[in-house]
Image (spheres, helix red, strand yellow):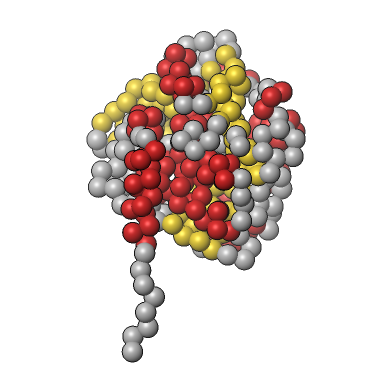
Length: 305
Ligand code: AMP
């Protein structure tokens, strides 16, 4: 089954302690698509400006990402500039230039409107709500957000929470949104406002999945070299949604596995700039890392005599 994603299609400029990248492919929709396309077909909706290097999207199309919904508008593309210092868990936004994004109204192509899995990647919550008005009763709707929108569009975000099944966000965002410092309380606060699944990502410290009656935790893969954390969250979401769409199941067991797929895909995203690593890994590489995840957490339960 396919996944519909609506998100940013950006040009990112990133500085990390290990190097710099200028105007490379980025955006929540792009990272999600590069990741989820390892598991299922993806339908991407977004907007680019007249200056976007659209030819660089061809490899995504070859991987089964349907780009029919990527609109080309007159003007400048969305640009994000960020920096990571030694704490690679948090990006410092140096500049956000909305460009064509500021007038963007997502138009979901007719053939995408019945997508069973919908991911509202990090964009203006008003646009996320607009997308939900155009799709026909999906099996699962998940969404992401960030500090930028929590600060500037809080009431729209609160409205959105009432219409989604799952919210994925990082620990800082969860604390900012809920004003709760304890993450268990933060998750409960969110569940009380709509989503039945809350995934709180903690960067290199792994990710929690909360429902009203369960908690699951998956570690992050302990990489020796994290090169550029940009897009880890979207790649995580791509692994999570991609796995659920591939299997068509939404029970607890599949949800848990989906979190591990999310963690696995996130770990690849950070190994190189942009979507470079996500575009070169193959099925075997993904499987091998999943196996390593299993060994990472496997232990025998044994009570001392
Ligand atoms: P993350 O997975 O959180 O690291 O997402 C990184 C991506 O989010 C980058 O590729 C940026 O282009 C994109 N991004 C940054 N700020 C925004 C924003 N305000 N709205 C939508 N996308 C954004």
